[in-house]
Image (spheres, rainbow, N blue to C red):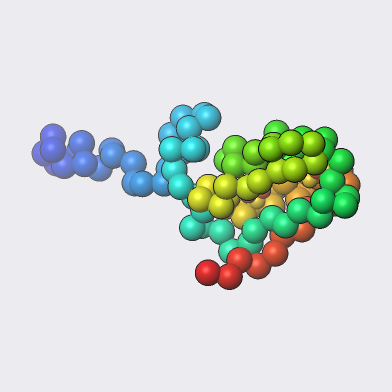
Amino acid sequence: MTATAKKKRRKPPLGIVTRPGSSLQNKTGAWGILRPLFDWEKCTGCNTCESICPDGCIRHLEKKQYEVDMEYCKGCGMCAAACPFDAITMEEEHR
Ligand code: SF4
Ligand code: SF4
């Protein structure tokens, strides 16, 4: 194998998270088939969802108000599973 071919082979494909904390470099929003839906009546503003999202795409706007950046949300459902007040449900994404 030539040196050029070896170099090409080692280059990671697009979308791989190569370093901790680097996931915002990859727009993973197209991966998902589900999206989180918040129930503001149930939400207490505890911030658990924001802290646990592996893609860092939940932003706290103000008390009990959050937004999800769908360019990065891959629909993994971790926020819904972690919410202690069942304030997030995962809904089918319609594109
Ligand atoms: S984890 Fe649930 S209750 Fe806590 S801020 Fe997020 S949606 Fe609200
Ligand atoms: S579904 Fe996953 S990626 Fe999307 S906001 Fe929730 S934890 Fe983050």
